[in-house]
Amino acid sequence: AQKVTQAQTEISVVEKEDVTLDCVYETRDTTYYLFWYKQPPSGELVFLIRRNSFDEQNEISGRYSWNFQKSTSSFNFTITASQVVDSAVYFCALSEAGAAGNKLTFGGGTRVLVKP
Amino acid sequence: DSGVTQTPKHLITATGQRVTLRCSPRSGDLSVYWYQQSLDQGLQFLIQYYNGEERAKGNILERFSAQQFPDLHSELNLSSLELGDSALYFCASSVVPGGGNEQFFGPGTRLTVL
Image 1 (spheres, helix red, strand yellow):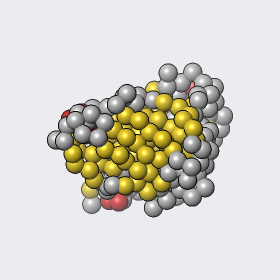
Image 2 (cartoon, chains in turn yellow, cyan):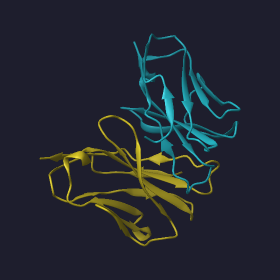
Image 3 (cartoon, one colour):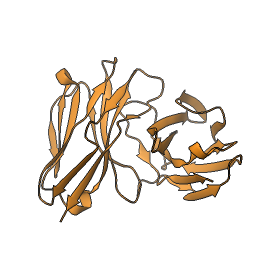
């Protein structure tokens, strides 16, 4: 069974600080996909990034970057130079290629509060 | 704006009642998913449809049912409502099923059962 754990429930930073969100996952599949979603105070879920299990290259997209390490089953997400608008709940999610359909299994979320 | 629409935005009803939540996927998306977000359970997958057929089922109660119509919109029916059914219900869509396809979420329907 697939499982996603986000150990940090809440992180508070001052604007312009970097924020790193931890995500640890469990799956028996060899092919799977990892995602980060953002849920701002308005409530909608916004897709941020996706990573395939067979591609461990870490990337940077604007102020977002991610560190995928299969050896430790971790998929951490960093916001560089945080801004007040980054205040939201961030969810890590996992989807298995082998499962019927491709449901997302979400972690419990990490609330990020960026203070001016 | 994800392109996924959900109606109504808010719904307040009483225990024992039945409600229907509606979702229209993004143009071109054939797969629809329903998720429930509650304080107790977090974000949970309920059910998925692909081109009108049920594709996968998650932790969906027997009191809940869903369907996807020929025009690809989907409805989630919740009956014999209980206080614990109060939650934010999201619909998401993707082009086709497949673990690598990102799901785009609608704004959600907030259900309050009194």
